[in-house]
Length: 397
Image (cartoon, rainbow, N blue to C red; front, side, top):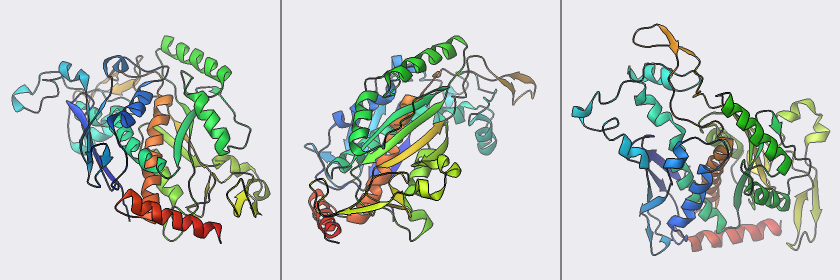
């Protein structure tokens, strides 16, 4: 059963983006600044386009919070599109403004343009591209920041870093413990491409510069992780309750994401079972937490049988190069049916660092939903009691 539900609305050049998140318990501290910090992280990253120089995203909480704490009612958030002032007739809701700007009739390969135009029977693909734009992810980051606040109350953290852009890759060799992940996140936040390795960061910046000069785009790979996740979120009982399945769907819903793996993922295909299973150990006193089952490796990425196993959850995602190119590819005009170059819309050269932040939001929303599913209650206090009782039971197992 889904506890947390989100709904978003808004177009890329519309008046604003808006979203509602339902299922957040009462008593969770929340302010616009808690959301704005992640909105700023989403806008950063070397290789972003001109839109980032126009927008300075800030969240306006419209409901569900009083005196700095959640009420338990739906939380509504709005983000103003500052570029709206240049699109008031082009994106107007009024019939009399129809035709104020030319229609988009040249679909871009790799984008939603043509499939959406055929599905919704429109000859102006602006009707499609405005909503399919990755601008929509700003409101997802805002709603995900609310979920992060819930998780933080129970010692759960979510972060990310970039592992590859184009042909430049940073390979992490050490086991990704909670301490190692904290260091990776700290280093990534200081990098222009959100990569924790300085040398790899410099190489990534250089290849982005080359892509800009070539009027091309670049994709890459990023890692999302969650620490402090208790054992037992999700379930093996039904396919749609498995935590890894829910996370994969959430990450795949982000624009331009074409692959998702948990733990060692695709690398497991070339390895024997003895090398990819995480052996189980037991200590009467483990890191000061009393009796505990633990693992020295985390090939499974923190999930076994559709359930969290107490290790950090590790997700790897692949982002394809952005399909909007300054050197357009071949296409066909949907009106004349003649060959023509694809349309160009202002876009980024590389948005992998931003996509990682969006993936944090989606990960937080799924884990918060699974957490409240297990430890449900209407208030922070009630959930905390349920959580503590469960953790005591786990430690006395």
